[in-house]
Image (cartoon, rainbow, N blue to C red):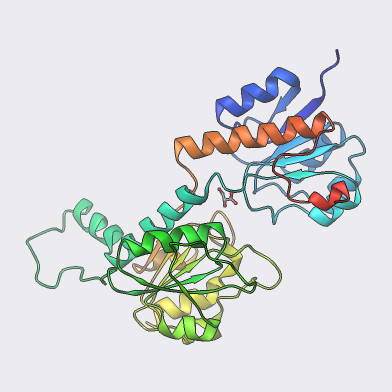
Length: 325
Ligand code: DGY
């Protein structure tokens, strides 16, 4: 029997790749960097399925130029890089990996929050530079996490998981979400307006998807409403924060610290002014990167891909309307 052909746009954890290889002819892009758009487009045009990542642009032009494409499966929960409307119009289901990375990402948001609060990056740089001279009474004084107010923007799965962790630190949690959210028992958090959240939070953690409404949500106006001691954590998507406004706010002391897993653009260029600031901690979009979670994400994306190729409903579908239900 002829196997379907799929383009896998990066080397994913082996368990997922093996599942795909069992049922497909795999064209694998082995470079660490994403395939150039032209390559992605020409491979999509001759394959039955795509297994892609958030750094691959799957736009309307690519979808319309791919007559054989039956499924797009993304190894990520977010899918703002994919024109889902165009995929739906072409009858192509889009898979993603919700749920599986919730706790791993929430763990990491908390790791960033604590690292920024207690200035661990600066401490490590100081020690590595041979500048630890003695126990200093005022050395690298940071901010207490326990008892502080945490503002969560976007109270979906990951926002709620961060709120659960905050309980262990006796934090007061307030949240903003544009939708009504039914909070499960065990999460105690008060809904607030964005303005109240900016004004009252000692820590603000972003967990909203990137949409036209949330693009540069954190802009100069928002930053000016935050406390000068505020720590901003972003594990959502880079463009939710206006990077120029963030630089100005950090450099002028309008807020105290930012801890970013995601940036605009990604990767952040080495000459970006944010990299000159001691009060800005930046890591390379690794919040979901535990061995177990990345393996589960690869397996889920393989399951979605294989289901789509068989004409079955994707187990984790970003555009269920493609099925007319
Ligand atoms: C996602 O899945 O959307 C994360 O940003 C990467 O794990």
